[in-house]
Amino acid sequence: MENINIIEVLGYAASVMVAISLMMKDIVLLRWLNFVGCSFFVAYGYAIEAWPVAGMNAFVACINIFHLIKIYRNKSAQPQTA
Image: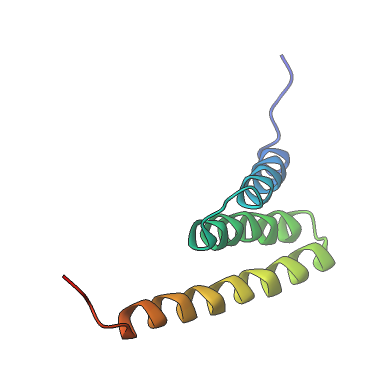
């Protein structure tokens, strides 16, 4: 049995998370899953010293957080109806 490289597994997990996120119809779920996938890619890029991978995914993760904050603020600003 081959040794499982944890860094490689992290890269595959990141790819799967980003791919799954792109299949979501719910934008909030899409943003959260994409954020997690991007965060995994940041860790992966850092681990293999692939700075463009880490940097670009950190940027995309920040974009996801920005949009999630906007979404949650808009939801909380809307009047609640019973």
